Image (cartoon, rainbow, N blue to C red; front, side, top):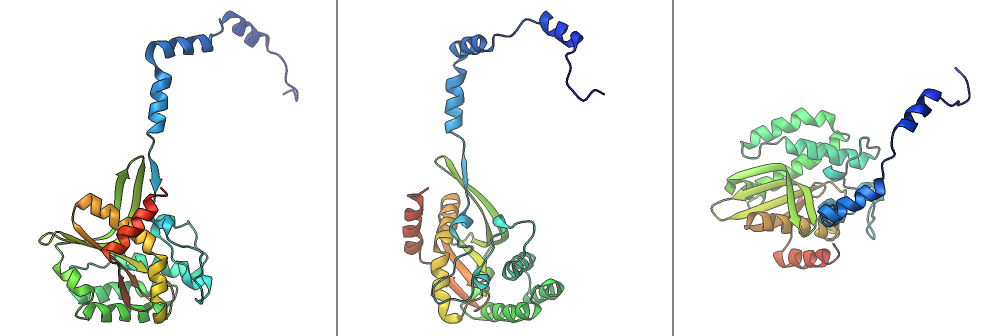
Length: 258
């Protein structure tokens, strides 16, 4: 084959036989006839923008007087990359995957069986055993998660939701949601694997207030039920429940910037 482009007589002859399309004239005629440009503009203005509550959560922030950045990183399921190099992120992913397998409506002994099947895959087995024991202790306490889960008629793990608001759509995944039909209440929980000390729990509360406010508002609008929201710190074994006024005020602040 030649290494330079050459003219083709056959191709040139075919092009001479074809009459050129007057594109500009045909588009103008179509616009006058159907108003398709106006329709296109209207539809373009109605394109829904996706917003995820996870984008309100810190990913690389280091609170004042806190452990290293690596220890504070918590990775949301919606934001997981194909490969995770950070040990703290890998542990967080393992915990979420493990917790998703627990059948919270079954007997507690089956929960331990689920843990035993998964613990060997944990990036930090010793930490997993310690934090699982903390969770069991919390669940068994009188005011722990056991009461909330026991009273629920429906429990959903890794529950996705889509809520349209104006020209945006709030989309996310809630780690754990329990529904009580009798009292028309919903409880939503997010696991947090940040490695913190017990006296830093208020810092954790502040870091994730915005994310939980978005979850809370979406479920509130979608269910018309009374919704309560909390985060559970695996490192401390503490449940942080947010107040309705606190979440409502935070959502008003967030929605003003959306």
